[in-house]
Image (cartoon, rainbow, N blue to C red; front, side, top):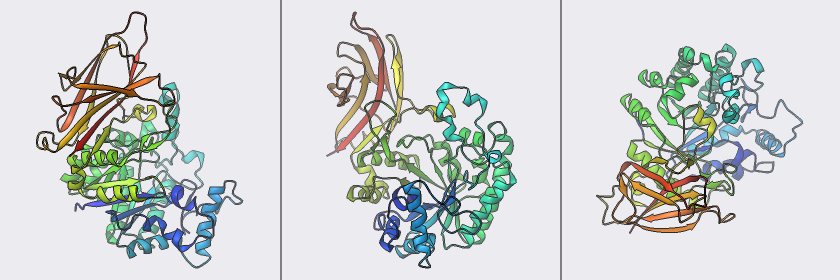
Amino acid sequence: MRKQRTIYFNDARHYYLFVFEPPMTMEDAWLPIDEVAGTSVDTFVYGVERSDGLFYPSKVGTMFGDDRNPLTEAYEWRTWKNMKSLMDRGLDPLTVLIDRAHEKKIDFIASLRMGGYAGLKDEHRVPVPEKFASDPNMAGTSLLFKGADHGHQEVRDYNFAVAKELIEDYATDGIELDFIFSTFYFKYEEARDNLPIMTDLVKRISEMARKAGKILGVRVLPTEEMCLNAGLDVRTWLNDGLVDYVAPITYHPFYLDGDMPIEWLIEAAHEADTSVYGFLHPYYDVEDDRRFHDSTHATPEMVRAAAANNFVKGVDGQYAWFLKWPLGDVERGILTEIGDAEQVAKGKKHYFLRRRFEPMAGIGYDGVLPVPMSIGDEVSLPFYVSDDFEKNAERISQVLLKVNVDNMVDDDNVDFLLNGESLANEQRTRSLAKHVAPYQSMWLDFHLENVRPRKGRNELTVRFNGRPEDLQGQIIIDDLEVVVEYG
């Protein structure tokens, strides 16, 4: 049965166990719950595992740090000592959070990384296939092949045992199977043949959860092709009624994507009366992705735009994580607003196109930007906006189309068309795109009055007609953004 939820995820590490100096106070131990309590968040998802250990005193697996003392990293030592400091007082670190969530009327779901396996042996690890290892553009693809091969019975037994413990021994409201941190779960060339193996494991866990009166959710990859290539037959899971919700996401990188290709999943899930929660990654820019840029959190207007697109596409709620920490008034405001589709629709929105990340593009999750252009080239840049410009014409005070072009001068001959209509007569202003290197690129801001986007899918066409005779080389379309303001 479909259910509206607003979910926040904490991975137990970066903004929790890594941070506090032991011994852990109860105020510190409660913080992941307390910092979202009182917002729209009604469901807290907690990542209970890293590939080298679990973040609670498991009876079937290894607790993080127990097998590696003495530790060499300060953050790892804090993690282990913080859990031990609670256990020395007779407290289970996981139960502390579960009880606090229930005290605050928040559902608690334990999230299990299905690629994890403490003490993972080389023979149990998914290898990087030659087709990726030999491609220089796919150098980062090893990020996607770091999990356990579920072709081995030992791996499946381990994950089932941990799921059983979380369902039967703890007062969780459900369990989430995280299939996105490690992107492949069988040898690449064997994944499709092994689809029934993973389906059987999901079925066994589902039956166990249902018997205990608890829900089962899954994090999955955005496209059906990616899921199948990973060994995940998500459509069969839905058709067979094995899961209660799906959350589509990619782990690399953490770009907020306001147009994730999840329409297929929404349709399939809703036909099965299963919920879909739209994932909201935290970043607008990612460090080291391009020169002169640092990792930058998305603004409330950017998160609002992505959430609005998700709602228009039909999701049953939003799923957020890794907001700027410690969570302050801005972050709590975001978490309050994204629970209300009508409120999200009314506010200022800042849409932007996600950039290309080669490893993910190589397995089917491509990005449009950046786009290099030579003289004579024409490119079409698709984007999606949720605002109804006709219905809200009297309320919309400004529509700004922003294009960041690298290596461009004002004498370049470049045409811009929105859905086939020229923007030559729209007011255009310029500004610096990089403060560190102001000479390198420029923002072109089109103040749209007569030619405006439409609700849903749009297309910006760029034609590079020519340059000054004494200037050669390409230009690069680095960014495409749309800002919609209401008055």
